[in-house]
Length: 193
Figure 1 (cartoon, rainbow, N blue to C red):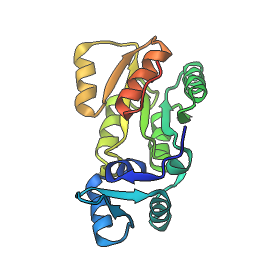
Figure 2: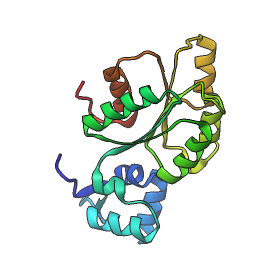
Figure 3: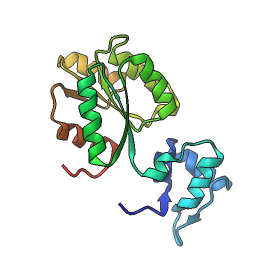
């Protein structure tokens, strides 16, 4: 994978996990250096300027450095977590962390700032709907995608999860290729599957 040297405001926003408007405001105020495409309104940000902006504003630079999408796996089934993490790590496009309860998930989401969460609906200490609601109530996490997983498939429960903020749902057991395909769709990453 070639290293990208120039970013659009939308790409910079995804990397920094802020809105595109925030990036545009910082660009227009001079906080974020870049250039306009000649003859257009489009703004472009060189990699070194984006890196400096992230460093100066305390934004983790690992997403820019690795190019990998960050995934948090939350499930109390240790074997399933191990399988998902292994599949994602071998894929090469994802950096993963995992926890086995809702409390740790809440802490890890704040610290790790994942792009996507694979969330078991039935955790020992909290249900997936509550986790989705907590994540969605934090504006700084609005870009985080959530895929809920569960053995239960009651349509009304799935609808409740989506209302609470889940982006997608997969029934257990599921094929790992199906999970990667859904993740790629949500993260707008090209799928090899």
